[in-house]
Length: 147
Image (tube, rainbow, N blue to C red; front, side, top):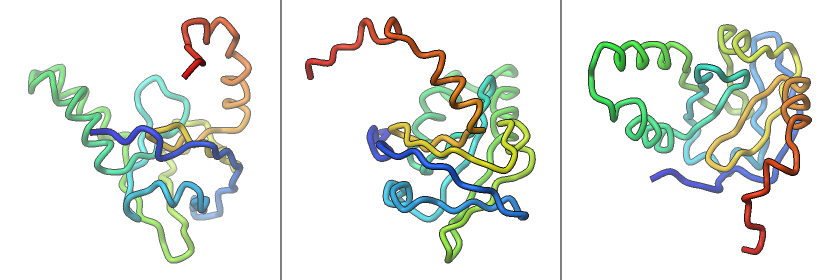
C-alpha cells in the first residue's frame, strides 16, 4: 500500500554541485523510510519524482506490471526503467542525480524540491513556477474543503 502523506508542507531550493549531488532537506529525509530511494522521470513529465522503494513497487505492481508481459508492456517497462536510478544518501545527506535525468527534467544548477504526498518532486524552478501559474480556481471546483 502506498503511503499518502509522508512528504508535505516543504518547498525549498537547492543547488547541484559539480558532481550532480544535491543535499536532501531534513524535512524530506524524515519521510524517507530508508537512506535508499529511487529517482525517476516518467514519460511526459518535465520533473523528477523521488519514491521510497515500497511506494514505487506499489505503483509498478498496480500500473506497470498489472497488464502482463505482452510486447507493448515489456517495451513500456524497458522505457520506464531506463529513466530511473537508485540513490543513497551519503554521510552528508547528499545524493547524486544522473546527467540523463537532469537533462530530461530541464534542470540546470538550481533544483526546487517540493513535497507531493507520496513523493518528492525535483523541478527546474522556472518550470515549477510556470506549472503553478497554470492552476486556477476551476481546478478545485470539485474539491470538497469541508473535511
